[in-house]
Length: 386
Ligand SMILES: Nc1nc2c(ncn2[C@@H]2O[C@H](COP(=O)(O)OP(=O)(O)OP(=O)(O)O)[C@@H](O)[C@H]2O)c(=O)[nH]1
Image 1 (cartoon, helix red, strand yellow):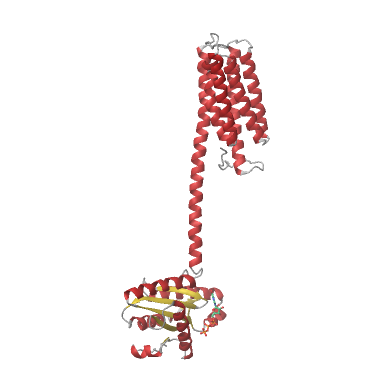
Image 2: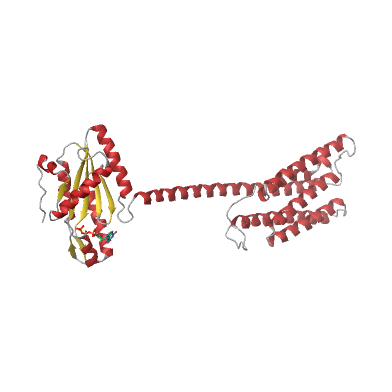
């Protein structure tokens, strides 16, 4: 199990984020192990232990751990990790083999070594080490059962030494476990964070794909979808949907006279006013440029349609301030009605567009129905708004 936790911000020396993290863990474990071995040797010297096989194994172990620390500092991480693991495993094995066998305290280091291996080396080393350990214990047991070496409690190994060894082994194993748990927590936290960021950016992308960046209104595609849905709903309910194609009159001159930035501000204000002219259930979308499309949904009383058109004409006549001066732009509106004029969005849009051009031809600042009779049936006369 190779950890992929971010580093702690320390100098990575050109390593990847995961490797610099691994280097840090390796140095921590090697340093603590070296300290523990050194402490153990100092105690042995202090109590005047003879320089026997155990001392030689501990000294060799300390030397190899220091070598792996040096390798880790030079960023030779794979070699450092392998050397540290191999030397500690060999040292623990040798201590068990040459001392008390099944009863030896060093046997307790095996689980810690497995955790260390899982923490810092690829998974195949973990399986390898586990197999070696199982094989070793098996041979140890066989050696005892065959009477080749019957382990006895070493009388020269005092209770104080045994207690110290147990404390050191437990402290080092505990350290490895603590690191593993904290790494797991960090990895979980990081993956949660990444998932949230991903969801957020997906939501942003979806929003951007469906909305107009300038006004925040649904864009052409989303407007089409929502008006089409409203038509399906109206078909079931037996009601109507009115499509109003709104085009600003002479908007180009606003851009030319007051600049593009003000033109943008004007378009945003148009969007706000269109939204104010309709109910929440209605749809206001931007087709592009100075063209907007309104879908008045679920119409049961046809008088609502010219009323909304009049409201739009009137609201758009309100000035937008430019340096204390009021700037006006009227609009022309073409109207087509579902299902009377067509039973799909594209057909209605085409008719509404033509009706809008009719409104332009009639002198702008007015609305036109796509079917002239509709004005008659509804007794509507497009008003002149000054
Ligand atoms: N500021 C700004 N201007 C835009 C944007 N999109 C399109 N325009 C401008 O809107 C203007 C639309 O002008 P036209 O379609 O020629 O029509 P008009 O001047 O409104 O004239 P009529 O429609 O005939 O009344 C063009 O000058 C475009 O450059 C935009 O996002 N921001």
